[in-house]
Length: 488
Ligand code: NCD
Image 1 (cartoon, rainbow, N blue to C red):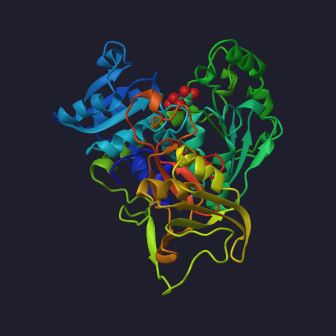
Image 2: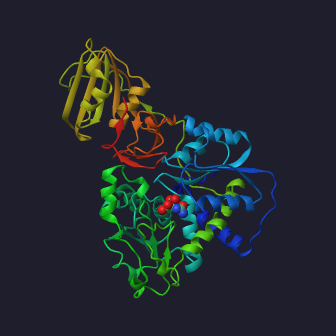
Image 3: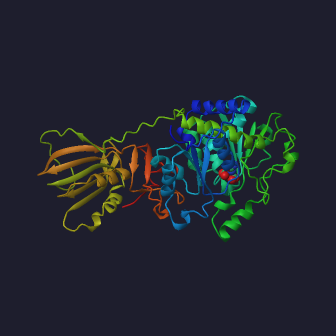
């Protein structure tokens, strides 16, 4: 694995390897002399711990730091696209690039387009994988395992990126996760669905902090991410509704387990405090140790990337996948007799999902065609599918782009090429595992959205063909066939 962009890329073994490396570093800390090699640290968003610990980690490994904290004073203010800025640092010879940016998928986009390792230090409200790693290290140090624990994630689970990455990591360990949040700031249902699907366990939900305290091994508190709320009065009202509801105070801890660990990625917000400072002196407060662990974990991550030590999870997609697979044409087979119309020459798209032909008709802009016969059959009986749609276009052929678009609406249909009432070619379409272009990610803060002007081509990974489920390669959003917007 070249980059450290999302926990999804790593295995349980990778995670345990990094934790052991980081603990080893903590116990026997070596600071190497500067060796003139450089690391780029590009922080477009505010940061204290992540930036300082990442940069200190790099310095301790012998690197020098170039970069910026806040884009004020850089050419970003002149409208420079993100990739240009990053490429320039690569050109200056940096060995790795650490990025924090407000757009989801920004680190993935850079990782795909640079040769050097890219470390995601937080991409909008999407994820924060190095934070999740130091969270896991802190839990591991305390319990000597990551299995068999009850872990509650509390607070802003909608916009909080640290809990998104942590939940992805907990998939790989035998944990009982409870989510506690204000109703408007719950974990997105697709994230919960993915967790449950990937590990086969369900998450629990609780309404109050009080009810979960006696049972949990780990309580992971988070700050309300005020800066990610909608702007203006709407956001203000939403924020005011939440204020103070999820405050953890010392007197609430009377019935907690003696080994409880309270974690918080920090900062806590003094305007709306989540963990009262009176908790700091209890044996449960682990958040300052957690922040310190950030240094050792980030040393371990940077070192492992530079040495290419992490195996990563395998993806089974191949760029050579075929969209169209030929089927055998049975000699002399005629088309048309069984149908409600006659097709002499053209294409007949069969086995379309019932109800999909009209959508395909408009997607292929067939409504603008005036000189060809087009026949749409909807909900006709089918032995294979129960009900199906069929679409016939006279005197026409399909471009690969058109085939691809049809497959997005209804994968696995059959295409018949007909000449003088004979089927001359026949085949099935299969969606490739990687879909590029024509789909629009539904996350407005995803780097692939055109209006962000980052020239990042929409890319989706097919998780299942039927029913169609894809996730955005950049921001990881999971979308089902019905939610997919196709860009015609
Ligand atoms: C977190 C972040 O930036 O997402 N902080 C951090 O990296 N330690 C959490 C937060 O800002 O609330």
